[in-house]
Image (spheres, rainbow over the protein chains, first blue to last red):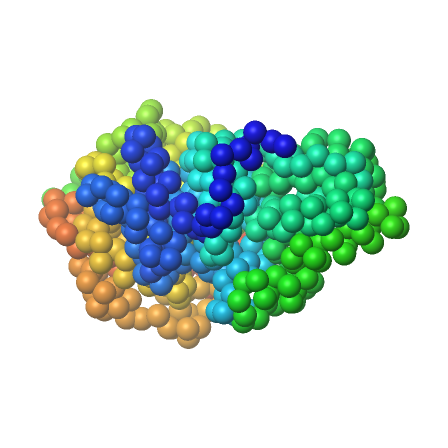
Length: 324
Length: 281
């Protein structure tokens, strides 16, 4: 329904992480003082593509080796000299391993440090539970001065990185390894504190982000066949959350389902529930990781195993609408 | 060669020691031991012509940077910055009080002259590495001076930064260790000994030297020579200091790491420093 959905080819699948290095190069091309700081994962995070985009960009990539705490504070120092410092690594290390550095330096001093790790959530797949970061949104969301972005596809990841660069102060951008179909057109622009209504509906509001957007859209098609008209909101900005759009939607539908590739504790679900409790209480359901670690498997298998796929969303939405 | 100059610098250092004690006494909490141990180092940097800085233009592009990695020595930094004119000395008595700019640990969003907020140990050297990289990228001439504790060197991140700085050839980085030999739980060598700190930094590729951290003339000489040398290696200066320096009953006592003097103790401490002031004046 949205203009955002025009001109896309869902058969082209790209991981959100693939947006990282090339977008940093684009930002540098536009004259922004962007630098990348990584921790031995320049190929995986694609910051190597930034460094190789032009000969002079190689000096703007700082590889700290396997030392994530140093990585965040080196970025802080670069920010203190006027640079827009993007950090990399995998989400589990780029947030959890360096939490104190993010909290006490990047956020407390409100520095222009962007925490932009890749390989978040269970989409890491076969690497298993040690590498499947499912608490990062909760960790980042709780820190004052931090903004939290969770893009759904390649094009919105490009837009999220640009938005982070345009935003003064720390921003968290969550990117994944799984290749996902396009949802947004290539010229999509995201705004801080906004959301995107991807589908309008009357019966249930489904609020999702990241890889759950694709699942939610599939679920909406199945629900439509069962006579349930779902509204889909992409809450790509978890903090600050676009409460107004969510509240307007639940005033219409009377119930809310939140789907996230993240623990049900502290992430988008809690943020939405908080807003709904305060402003317009309605029945809610939550699709997410249920206080458990992940495990090895292929991404699609894991999405089904842990009850995060379209089928799980359909089941939860049907229960919610029956009880409503 | 520094005798006349250092006499006045020693007077400045004594006045700052008095201010440190008075503000902690007024606050009723704070860290006198590690503040007093680094006063002479701060005096050499800010008043001995080592650090290029401008209190009327704290963000001057060509300035050197000072990062207080051991953020609990905030009273020493506040005493220094106010003495230099970054903010009124009168404000020191608001330390740690609700509504004050002078937080228990330095907050860069509040206090002019504080480059970055610190307080969580082990981070200052990494931040300084990033600043040194940034200055090099911009072809800026500034040096970055970091003041760390010897106990702080127990933090693993210090060694991540040590490796990084040497690898990146950060010759514009100078780390000074306030080697007072004590931490909260006792002697650094007894708690979890990080020594020999100089040798360890040297093994990573740093140029290292040792100096009496209470000899202001020697500190100025050492730090000035490092700036003049213009090398490709980062520099570590192990400054041997005494925790609580200047107040006999606080000297070399771990118990004075994070405890404020009561009114009687404060008076005794100030009397001792004032007497010393008069003798040398």
